[in-house]
Amino acid sequence: MSDLGRTPGDTADAVTRFAPAERTLPTLLQRQAERYGDRRLLVFGDVVWTFAETVEIAAASARTLAEAGLRHGDRVAILCSNRPEFLRVYLGCAWLGAIAAPINTALRGGQLEHVLRNAGPSLLVIEDASIPALDTIDPTLLPEKVWIVGDAPPQSPAHWTGLPALGEGMAPGQVRPGDTVAILYTSGTTGPAKGVCCPQAQMFWWGVYSARALGIREGETLLTTLPLFHTNALNAFYQAILNGCVYVLEPKFSASGFWESIRRHEANVGYLLGAMAAILLAQPEKPTDREHKLRVALGGGVPARFHDVFRTRFNVPLLDGYGSTETNFAFASPIPSDHPGSLGYLVHGIEARIVDENDAPVPDGVSGELLLRPTEAHSFASGYYNMPEKTVEAWRNLWFHSGDRVVRESDGHYRFIDRIKDTIRRRGENVSSWEVEQILLAHPAIGACAVYPLPSELGEDEVAVAIQLRPGAALTPEEALRHCEGKLAYFALPRFLTFVEALPLTENGKISKPTLRAAGVRAETWDREKSGYQVKR
Image (cartoon, rainbow, N blue to C red; front, side, top):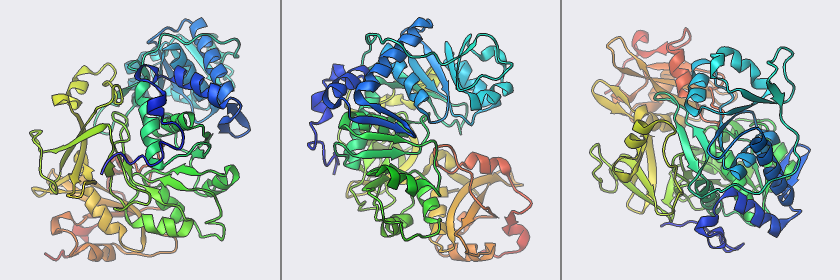
């Protein structure tokens, strides 16, 4: 089963409307502006851009960059939260042929220094709220040109200026589908963050594949609360451009305000990743839970147990899917999913292989590393910026190595097992953190959890878990372990259990395991071995 696009014929399919040489943002914007004109494209609070206005903004933004000395291939670092100014700068870069380098707004110190050193930007566009982050880094890493979104601090350097006003536009630069439009930085959980070089056409294909998977129809309203410095929110913008949709951008995810935003904007499509669905389910039930127009929500990484509960409570099916910054929307489920919590099925235009440690294919039903490669030109990233060794390592043997342990089942659907780096090695045995989490999540008192390694006195890994209980629920460590016994191998049972009010999340709504690992064994952590608890074998 492949090519799960169910509605490319609702409007003329973008793949046939845009020839390979036309799959660049300037061409997409101009062509769609001719088609949709005064139809709304972007909504952010009181700010509204039509399709026609967006072309003018892109062209004028490109001129401000060109007049500041930016040229094709120059990098523009963007340290800014979700707001129209972010998209204005991104559009200007894409129109001119410069490269946008969005930066996670949470970065400080060495992490922020690494990104600036790696990208080598000619210009930094920074929101006023993020300026204190610059006090944590070596100031010599800052480019000479700094534009501030908002108010400049009183003691800011004289050469720091506000975001220039928009004037006349300019013709698009000589932009090709394979040119890098953005450098998007990975989380850097296994080392320094890697800057993923995303071609113009890769973002086109993100829009195509994602819209097909979600069954997006012309004129629908798409609402995202995810950060623009990651792939998901950016590719939702391309979904809107390609399908004549309204793109509603919210400042950030709010569990208490999510459904109110969905109702206010009459949104048809939403985007939930990782723990976000569980967080919404943990909110008190309301009579208005089903009073909205949301047709479907992306649910990549949402555990299987939450799918039916979410659909029953909110009348919204969750779409299973898989993609990475380096690849594309490679797997998608039907709506609703026929295997909740899986990756779904491989989409048309991408090849997949599951291999062992020697890159040799393994049979269906056997886990191995997921390898991917495209059959469409420039639909995957072209490598890691200024990291040739990492590029060769990840793309060795002409396949992108995902680092994910996956199983392909006999009916063609793919099932995620674990990040290979998240496999915990204990007493000579491999423990899948994902599998332990699924068992724990089956307990009715547990709302969310994260399993991760902590060092033992023997110098190897011990299994640790942080547990967030459902509202009003109670659970002891002993009860949690008794729930796991008989369902997990004895060596996979957690040793360290910590109950938390809320799990730490990344800006993208995923649980931040590095934060948990860094916290180590806390005063409130329960230690199975010190408690005297006897594991049944």
